[in-house]
Length: 227
Image (cartoon, rainbow, N blue to C red; front, side):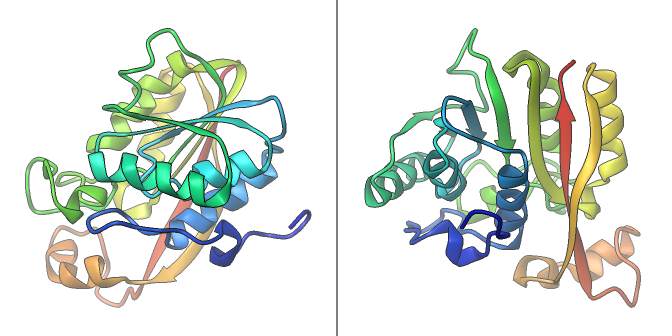
């Protein structure tokens, strides 16, 4: 795999229990960023909102000492099962973001949080949609991660977070700058609309988040470094 861009198959065999987010194009894009970052043995890496644990296991294969957190019980169980299946050691905790890790800091923090704008004012508290719905602007979790990241990163530590143009990457960059991090868009790709976006196209267009002729979603990875 060295020197090659990851594909979904590079994430290995991934088990997903019902209601747990399965690896998609955003997972692959984030995996590319993780590999480019040069994750290597001895590094400590935190995966926030790990879902299936696919990226946590991917980083563990690269030699990192990985901690993975998720608020969902099924996600925690799924991550433990996938680490076992891959014969990789991943420390997995049920946690609202990094609340269960007071005082811990990491070389790399990665996250594929819920980021799809949804008609509901607040994100759902359960069910499959919890993995993607993130309030009317899609930023309910993204903003919290931006605010939490500086305290989780060591000096020269890096945050890698993937999300959609629908939740405004420019706002993410500004929030990270305001938190004292150096931030940029490091990766970008376009993918056809999936079933979630297709199911709320009219609402997204009504809100001006999508144009009338757009048929692809732009995904970005935000890279932020702590001085």
